[in-house]
Each structure stands twice: as structure tokens, then as C-alpha cells.
Amino acid sequence: MLLNDNDSFWTGTLIPDSGEVSSRSFRLKVAQEGGVATALFGAGAGNDGLPVPDSVSDTGPRIGDTSTSTTLIPEGQWPGSGVIATAAQFHIDSPVMTFDAKSGSLFAGETFSRQLVLNAQTALNTPNEPHLIGENRITGEYTETLTGGGNPAPFPGIFILVRDIPTPLPVLSNLVPAPQ
Image (cartoon, rainbow, N blue to C red; front, top):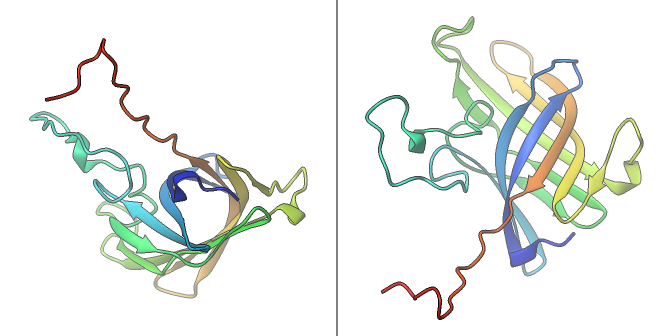
């Protein structure tokens, strides 16, 4: 697998096998250095690779306080382990991430933990269970294990990762003066 610029942020989507119609998103940074791949799950402003605007709004939620990941990944940065990022296999184990159930929910006040295992192997690709590894998209299987108040429960499904398009460098020309 080629990771241009040695590191890239990716937006991931989990599609559960259970038949639920809603999917959940998360952010992931994958890097290659000296032939070793690393991964970092991130959620929350400044942790997920998304820009944090300088402006502050006095009405409604502040843009910098939002994240596409915080419904799945607790706010912060969480290093993955068992990372494999080759043309034939992509694998990451998230750490066990603890979170509190939101107020107003059925389990308000309870503490839970979640662990994700992402796995894509081109040798396992079938029409019904896609395993694709490309430069800008990866598709495979995931298992989400939830723990809290009882036995751990595994939930399988399909994941899709899409690589962020890098921000282009500014083009300097005689028509566009350089910033002073």
C-alpha cells in the first residue's frame, strides 16, 4: 500500500452487519516511517486532523467544539496496535477506549469501553464481503467489542476508509503576490 507523504488522515465509516440503517464515522491517522506503520484514532477539535476555525460563534454550538468522531471514539487521541499496512493486508486494533453513557440515555451514568479491530485482506475479497486496499480507499471487516455491566459483546460489520485529499500548497506567481 502506498501512503503518500508518509502519513495521511482518513475518514472511516462503520456499517454494522446487524441490519441497522445508520452508520457511524471516525477519524484515523496512518503513518509509515522506516517501513513501520502506525495508527492513531482521534476525536474532538484538534485531535482528528480536521481544521479548527479561528472564529468563535456567540450563537449555537461552536464549530471548533464539534467532531465527526466523538459518537464512536472518545475525545482525545488513541494509538492503535498490531498495525499492518501493505498492498495485501490492512489491520489495526484500537486500544480499549472507555466512555460514559450520555445523560438522558437508558444507561446514563454507566461507564463502558469499546475496542475496534479493522481488517482488510485482498485475498478475502468476495462480492458479498469486499476487502479492497487502494491508495485512497480501504474496505474490509471490523469487529466492535463493547463492555459494560456484563459480558463483552462483539458486533461485526464492514468498514470503509477514505483518505483525505491533501491541502495543496499555495501557488505563487507574479499575479498573486507573496504574503508579507
